Amino acid sequence: GAADGEQGLGPPPSAAEGERLESEARALLAAYETDLDKIVETQAKLGEVANLVSLFSTKVVEQQEQVDNIHELAEESTEIIENAGKHLDRAVENRSSYRAWLVCWFVGSALFLLVYDYLDARFSII
View 1 (cartoon, helix red, strand yellow):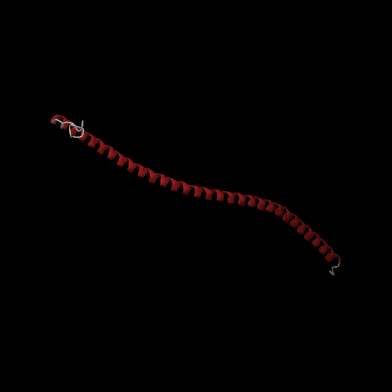
View 2 (cartoon, one colour):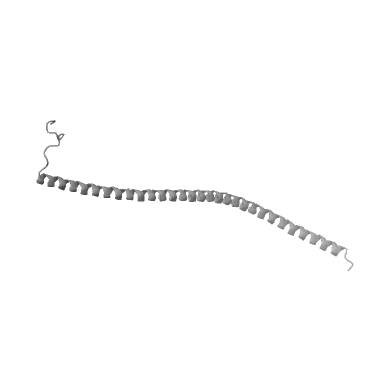
């Protein structure tokens, strides 16, 4: 150990062992580069997913606004339809009342004409 003076490095590797180590180093480097490429590709895909999630979120907010608007319009339409029903009921009542007044007018006019004709015939000079 301490007598070697090389601090535990041992004898230099043989040519075959050096070649094997260099081959392993190249294989490890290729594997790390492949892994790095996959990591970069995965990061790019994650960025795309994040953009799609953001777009999806924006569309959901837009759709929620549209749904709220449709809900308000539906409530307004319901109120308008209820008011229209009330107006129709009043129109039916007024129509009946109008008929009664019209009948009264015709009966009154007929009575007036009968009385007028009677008086005209009775007090006529001719």
